[in-house]
Length: 350
Image (spheres, one colour):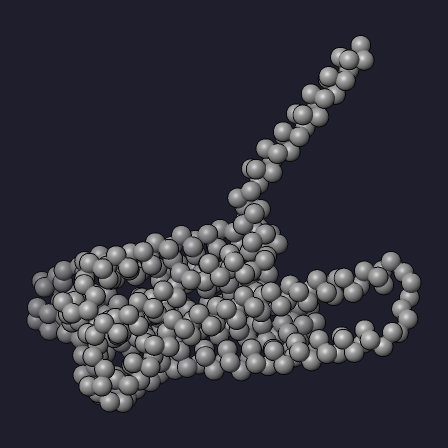
């Protein structure tokens, strides 16, 4: 799950053919651009979606949208030729384009933003009042920028393993001891281990908290305590129940996002771990390894489908954006019919 997951020297004669891999990457890129672009459009157009949670969801979609574009540019389109008469420019292209530096920087940013999304749910569940009343939106925007900064700054070190030598771009990722002993462990930690640990700990704590809240609410309702017979008092349980269901829906949605992240990248992580430990234990040109990379790349377009099928606020936003014209036409049709009926009744009365 780093810039060495798909080495430039991988042969495509075995396993998946170059054509089939290219088709898959094109489809993933197109799905990612359309799906994540749709998420950004809905969040930008619908005022009800301007919330802290959706700020990080929009940030995730923007990262995945850029990743989808770079996937096509880095893995589908041919690499630009190195200007041999300009060694400085050739070195830059070699280190920061041939190494797929932008793509893997965005992969790091995507993983770290998932951590922020998970921590946001932790604060919203365990400290709801303080979280709503003492939110600094400028600080949140800066926090949302951190995954981008960390991803691109960290991946700058990948240029250490890529250099321009005469006429060729030499990449020494797996053969360099520093890559195996330093860069690879840190990359795997940022991109997979840290997000998974945070997700497991936070969602386990949220599950326990929600279960305890449900038990307390059940015990409170079975006491049969008398409550003031007022309209406001009768509406409070409904409001609380609505908020609880909305909160649970958000948690389920982000939990599914986390689960699919683990499913998509776990196979690739296990294979890389075996490769680092055993050396020749894993063939990076094998069909299994290529499938693990394809599964990982699929994570960049799966989230919009999760929002569409699970996230109720996003579903309402979709209807507001794309069904507005239908609602207007229905309203106009009803008005036209009512006017016609009025005119008919007037004619009959005359």
